[in-house]
Amino acid sequence: MLGRTAANLFWLSRYVERAENMARLLEVGYRMSLTSRREGGASEHLVSMMQAAEVDEGFDAKHELADVDTVAHYMMFDPDNSSSVYSCLQAARTNARAVRTALTGDMWESMNGAWLEFSQIKPRDVRGAKLQGLLQWVKQRSHEFRGALLGTILRDDGFNFLQAGNFVERADNTARILDMKYYVLLPRATQVGGDLDIQQWTLILRAASAHRAYRHVYHDRYKAENIADFLILRPEMPRSLVYCANFVQQNLDSLAKIYGRREQCQDAADSLLAMVEGASMDAIFSEGLHEFLNEFISRNNRVTDCLSDSYNFY
Image (cartoon, rainbow, N blue to C red):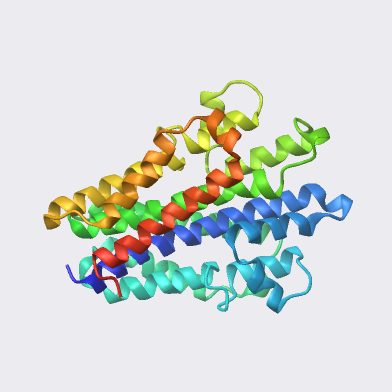
């Protein structure tokens, strides 16, 4: 497979996942802002969400006030924001068109249809309940594309590049969602275990589609240690760090077998997986959760860098 084709497939999958993840982060920031609106602190949660997505500097350069409408427009529709849903779907569709013959008909129709439909939406019409409806639509279209991918494509090197892109991006998002709560939104000691703290943890779990699954595994109240464990170390949780790292490694190992050689990206994936497989919550909290998550994000980024070098992405 040509390096350009591999890169298009990898980034196609990443951008589809990122569009969904931006919708998830915005939903969390929006719902958190509602809990504090009476106290005049709504913008704090919206800014925290943008910090987690690393788009706050771009927002500050264009806007003075972080209110719901302005932040939602920047996260959903602003073409100057490379991580906005608009930019992600446009980039995903561009990558898909470049490798049209490497995709199945169902994959292309799902991707192309999502972009055409979203590009017709007028931002001024998306407010309040309509915003929440659009966020759900973004997640559903991402699921539709993922379902077409898993149900129709050959399990060859193209599949491995697509899956690697998906789980690299998902791991990054889960780490950022956790960091958003634990580093930026961590309440004062007097608030821990209070109603606001519990509401925030509930929203974090919902952002990772983990609320019901968490209640199935842990039957007690929401606890920081349990939630962090669930989103980091539980291998059966499909958005946990260890689950994502394991899938990244599996797909890159499959590429090594297909091409008959082992590259630096496989070593980077091994390092990423070893970091979470060899961890315990006691050790993570002792080191500092924020520091642990930052190191994980750094190693996850290295997987992409090494993959680009190994397979001549350009």
